[in-house]
Image (cartoon, rainbow, N blue to C red; front, top):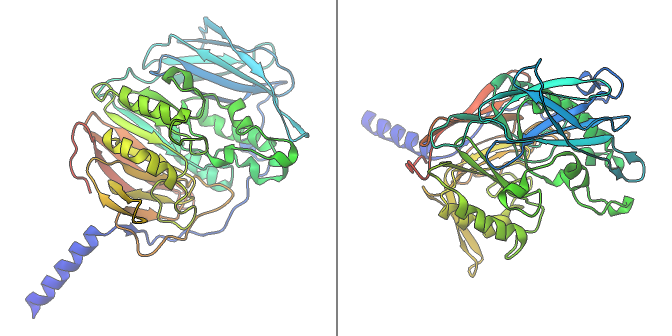
Length: 453
């Protein structure tokens, strides 16, 4: 009898080990509002017409360039960036461009500047300053290392951030974790939550995120809250505020639009896709991705990482199956390319899958997800803390493809060690305390395609 009880217990352990985990952690579901516009994290810098909302992104395909962006609120002023290898030796000079936009008949932006710093050395700290002629402000950044197969690098992974008190926790915790660049999977300011898409909330979000985004590149993905499409108030140009403020180096990868593109960073080839731009057969995005995957060189950049906004695998009732048409269109390509990781936002909770592929049965009207060692891991990281609150309605039972899921706010990090191994962590905000709630070692699908399920 005792032996029988032991066997039953062991079988139960095996069953649990094979099943996914739905975290038992229960965080308060209280929806916190956006921080007030006079909050200290939104405070404009001192000095008349001082540059604000400073942020950078990679400016070319491989990391030899950086795009610096900022806003001057009162006058255009100078679009010059002075930069160099020391704070007291800004001997290099580049002049950028300046633009404004209006929105909804009641808002006109400040003067938005963009300047490309080119011919930079890899893995080098540069100091830079903007705002000449009024109040000069100085910052610094470090360029990524030269792309190569065994170059270590640490990414921050953030999505659906918004500008609530939860958002502030997320950004503070990421600062404490010390990543080298952020892969941002869409939904920035949530300005569209306000009447007439109050674009002052684009300004406050830019000031809020500056404390990180001015010092390391953020790789941008467009989400649904970047659409800002509102014909009722005369706004029929999709993505106008986002595209005006947040440039991407799309032309460097042969893209024809700023919403889908690629960059090489250290040992990673990062592909950004646009969930809210056309991606059907023969569209520009479809054509570009087909050619782009052929250009991926796993001997140079072993890690193939894809960013989308709407998740392809999601066991939450919130936005359930919304990414299905893009998955059907592109999933076979990513499996053939042995992509390592697909990151998404949109759903305001956290979920990590096993390596899975869906065998579509179009004629039979069904689809069956199955484990596949050539497939990527899918991570939904739309838990940055935005005003819409948590998505806490997970479907039951937990599907076999889902490895871990939890309805909490937080961020993740991906630390690439070499061509074969990367270490991943998800950090739960935990009401102000940085907590690691999920972690995994990933092995590279090209160089070490072990069965990590």
